Amino acid sequence: MACVERVGTNVELKSTAEKFFKRLTSEIHHAPAASSEKVHSVEVHEGDWGTHGSVKLWKFTLDGKAEQMKERVEIDEANKTITFVAIEGHVLELYKTYKVIIKVDESGLANITLEYEKLNEQVPTPNNYLQLVAGIVEDLEAPLVKGN
Image 1 (spheres, rainbow, N blue to C red):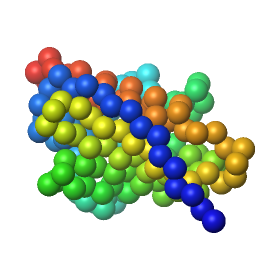
Image 2 (cartoon, rainbow, N blue to C red; image 1 turned 90 degrees about the horizontal axis):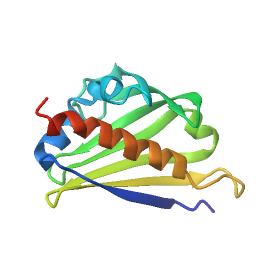
Image 3 (cartoon, rainbow, N blue to C red; image 1 turned 60 degrees about the vertical axis):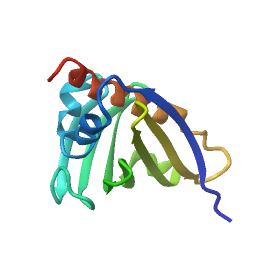
């Protein structure tokens, strides 16, 4: 029987919830410039940048290795939540399912949750992926604080 597990963290935001949520949804193409040591490219494969259901291909570095992940985006405007659902890529070599859920709340936090199912018991908890996502979130927000 499959068991969905979760791991999460919070990133304190210095910008407004509205600005940061907009950055996550319709301005995610800024990720390679904002987080160049981590993210090499983000390309739209279906849909548009800020469209619910769009598909994007991410190329990034994790633990010194080049990886990629194709994901489908789910956007919940009312709750300021965006979910990136892995549909292809290296992460699915370890996890049967993998989702990154980022909820931006009015108190100034970006709540990051990874939901995943391990392919087997030897697969580690994806703490390295969680640290990567948290770092990208911090990098994406930095220009908003500077007014860019």
